[in-house]
Image (cartoon, rainbow, N blue to C red; front, top):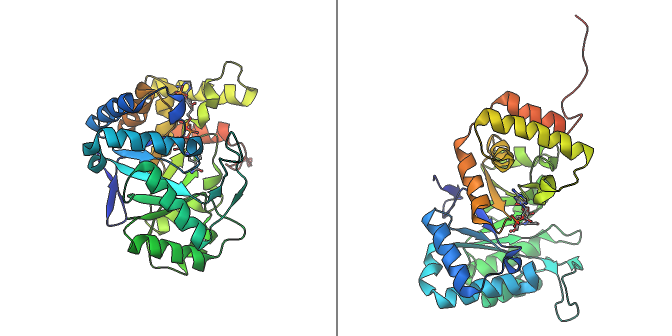
Length: 307
Ligand SMILES: NC(=O)c1ccc[n+]([C@@H]2O[C@H](COP(=O)([O-])OP(=O)(O)OC[C@H]3O[C@@H](n4cnc5c(N)ncnc54)[C@H](OP(=O)(O)O)[C@@H]3O)[C@@H](O)[C@H]2O)c1
């Protein structure tokens, strides 16, 4: 598998393994280490976390695994995120309360992630969401401090719009190596809000979260709209010779001009592998547009002229 460059200093696998649902997969540290070893053999070296996942528990479990198998540390790229405020002492389950991108908060959130993971640094730290009260100068200070102290090797953003990235970039020369956003056949905002063009301009790959639409298209009782989308996905699945519609979902993202790294959410190895398999397909322009037209009606101008 060809790896993808995130700036000059980091390369990642073309598919990242999302760890948001790790605690639901029923793995203890030992079984997680076996799973990670299987993934590593397939070239899946990149793992995506956030401090809020499992109220910190996902990072804790991965940290336990690394303590059990310290040799795995240098074989993986750890991505984690901070900036969403949560209070696990006050809440039995996660509730997103607010965002805080102040210097002190970002530094302490990152340090808490490192502690839970039991590592000295992470390969990539993402600021999880833009905050209406964010002060780019403070964010830049936090990034510079974390980089100088050797706690973060690279920085990226998540859910940021082009103008918000530009505002931060006005205050720092530290490269922003990616923006992680929701991207799928059910979430195409990136086509209309300038995100794709911004990434192309910055020569920056995007990370696509919820690439399999969070599982929405596999429900038993599909809405009329989802039923129509699945119908088209199945037709294209057959044309591509793919085994499942999952592969079509990923191939649709890979057909974009911007480089896209999907962040899978499934706990099932065979489903993660479909994201890898889909790297082989080259979706035609017609197939790509067939999905766009059905999934985002109105995106393509439907005005016909009599000749
Ligand atoms: N930056 C952000 O703000 C942000 C937000 C959300 C998520 N993320 C990251 O993105 C990752 C992926 O997000 P996501 O979980 O929404 O991704 P996703 O891959 O679109 O959805 C995963 C869900 O879909 C189900 N699923 C996938 N393929 C299926 C199939 N063929 N049949 C039935 N169900 C299927 C999975 O169930 P099974 O496990 O049973 O397969 C799982 O519940 C997260 O782990 C996290 O790392 C980032």
